[in-house]
Image (cartoon, rainbow, N blue to C red; front, side, top):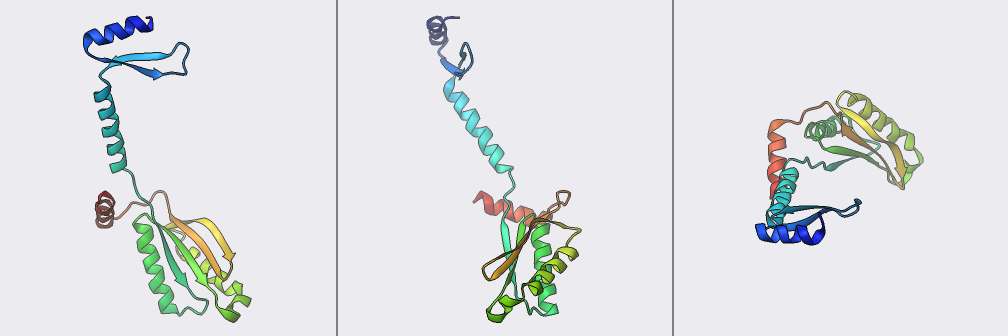
Amino acid sequence: MAPPQALTLARTKGLDLVEISPTAVPPVCRIMDFGKFQYEQQKRARSAKKHQKVILVKEIKFRPKVDEHDYQFKKKHIERFLADGDKVKATIFFRGRENAHPEIGRRILERLVGELSEMAVIEQDPQKEGNQLHTILAPKPGMKRSQSTSQASRDAASE
């Protein structure tokens, strides 16, 4: 149908002539209520945004001389973050002479990754930047988020 004919047909019906695909040959147009179309698109976008999952990167800092109790305490925090579906950046912070022995920090990270292997995957291998050594852990794809924390994170995201 010719564009002027389609435009007159749309006006007689009280609707709009909307170009759907301008790059197609010939261009594709549709007769519809454009305001209603925009409203439905916005509604779909809001619905999609409501159902998306927000992933945060939480950081836990260790020192090369970390005590066993402190290590276990921080490991439990990492397990909780991974159970919530968040990524975790484990960082070893070196000061002074500790910089001369990065292998100590690497051993701590390797131990952490080994102990968390059933609930996390390494997203980034241990990497030294300046006086820090860090790795990024992500929850395994098959893991389910815990109910109470996922509800709280959805409430916080909607505000």
